[in-house]
Length: 153
Image 1 (cartoon, rainbow, N blue to C red):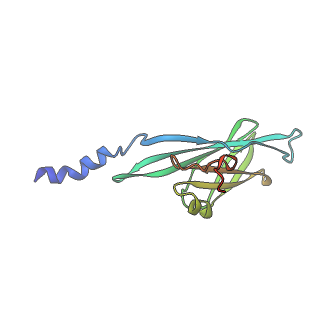
Image 2 (cartoon, rainbow, N blue to C red; image 1 turned 45 degrees about the vertical axis):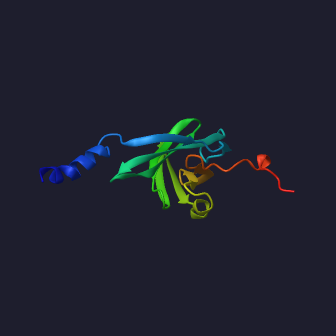
Image 3 (cartoon, rainbow, N blue to C red; image 1 turned 120 degrees about the horizontal axis):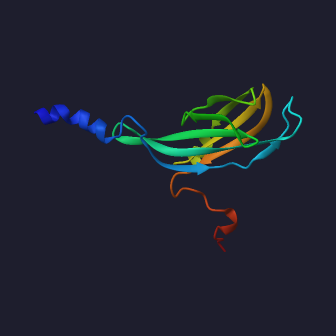
């Protein structure tokens, strides 16, 4: 009977509750863009990456997507986004506010099971700077390059 009372505690301990409970991490990097920002004399390189992993929750795991946005290679935004919803994220770069509305693309998720796409419209100092598209595919779910698709005759 005591074992049954301890079962929920043992289950939580086995799931890695507390600490860093992230499993495998995959990094996806969209192409960088050269953009103009008001008040900055030189063109700026807009880039970023998304790290996708799974975290333990209950008796299973759930996806976790962490977006990094950089300007001239310097960190500007670093935040976890909601997996199935639009998310507003923010940071600073050279004393200027950097914001991004990351829109979750439900249509992409329907077409490629176990994948997520976020389209992030980036603004610096309240001026639109560019758009980054972050795509994460589940293990073994990346679509083939169209040029290597077999043809049917």
